[in-house]
Length: 98
Image 1 (cartoon, rainbow, N blue to C red):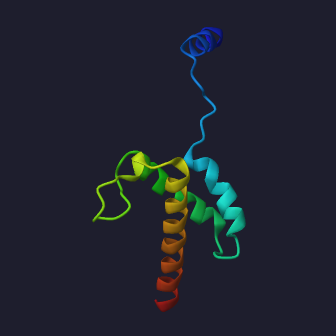
Image 2: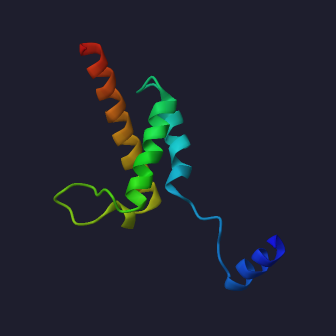
């Protein structure tokens, strides 16, 4: 079966090595590791945001009509990582005040 799948992919000339927003997350998180304390939580939130953006459930802002699902992978990734860092920091601040 796998051989036939490869034949079909080759005949259709599909490029299956496309870059996705998740490919950028690890790279950004390694460079921003001093900004937050829990990398696993930030990564989990970032991937959740990426999924929401890819399915069209969020946009850059309420005033803009351009959904993030039409944006490049790198932009969706940056948006998702920044939102997850902000969310993580707000949760830490909330826990301190309780």
